[in-house]
Length: 566
Image (cartoon, rainbow, N blue to C red; front, top):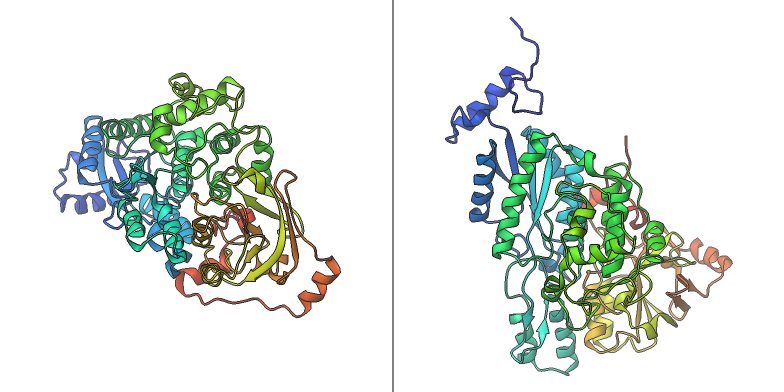
């Protein structure tokens, strides 16, 4: 006799039929799970632990055991499900860097797959680094089961033998200085050895820190998670809190769709502007918002930038402050408190751990030198700007909080390169000089493919002390730690026939950050003439990169394969 599908247990929010559930349980019994425990709601601990990079290393077996215990006490059964964890720093300035941005969409697919394939009742998703945090959240939004996030906390700042603060990004600057001859090989190796002393996210306001903050502002992660030192006692307590909260969300059937709103995503942009967050946010926040059926565009960023002041700068926006200083000053909560007091953030926005107003109420700004008030900001406007003009007719992005104000208005002749490698070798050979506007193209989402970051070139610029004397304009992206006059995300990209592809050596380029303009002194008629003989540079791609090239959107729309909605 055939039985109709039924919800066989009060503990489950998924619909199971008896046969399928028993079939699953048979496999659970094989791993020592008791019949009684198999009746509990299964909560996936979806994490990225691996032995290859420090951002994901904190999610070890000891931490997982702590979280499993908390979930078990509250009636759940937590099972660990590992997925890919990548780090941009591992493959910087290698062909592997082309995979880092596409990895975001691949990770989102992994989360969607393991959650749905295993019929999870809820998830704690755990990651730290640049692309993995937004990727996990994209997948969680599509799955829409009770979900919280726990991020890995920040790494301690490094110090050279003489006590000077250093971070991962200083290694590239030191290499350029070594090649130039301004430091010795021993001094360079001293930086390499001491830049990253502990596990966790790099301790500067790069993409990893910006994305971990995004998870918190959206309400997925515990209060102070992103601005807490990795593996500290407080961090462990936050992990246990995340475990308890997923059971609360399961019990009350609170899903991502119940907490997210247009205002939630705009709050993230507001926080970003107040802290000079990473330009990569203009890829990740729109892509994530799209999954939740909300609309965040570069124009959203620019509008908010004009009304939200810059309140806090840590490296690379400040020469010495790191996440340790930010944490001691009150961290994310303190920034939110200042924005809330001035009416610059929506305090009613919901989250798994309460509202933004709750976050503001429990915070304290302990150092107004590190975290300014809205009444006395560092700059009246946010730290990012969206530029328009005949270069990047859709948009281009600059993190001007990391640019010397003296260089906010800049002009110079173009020097054009079809890859970052070519430009990097050119500057090391002193073929690029002060006053040049360097064009690096065919490094966009489709052109590279994969949109690698141009950090290596800009690190060489900074290492040579030319941060305010050379401009870069590219369809590639940047590390969140990139400093200097670096303009990226030029859309349309060169591969798709954007005007960036048609610029020639010697064309005069004009940059005006305050006016939000990016132009080259070439007429539309001349562009049309050059276009007649133009053919794209096609760089080889196989496998996942080939699929990504065929399916991804422009940087203007998040550089994602998941933009179109059914």
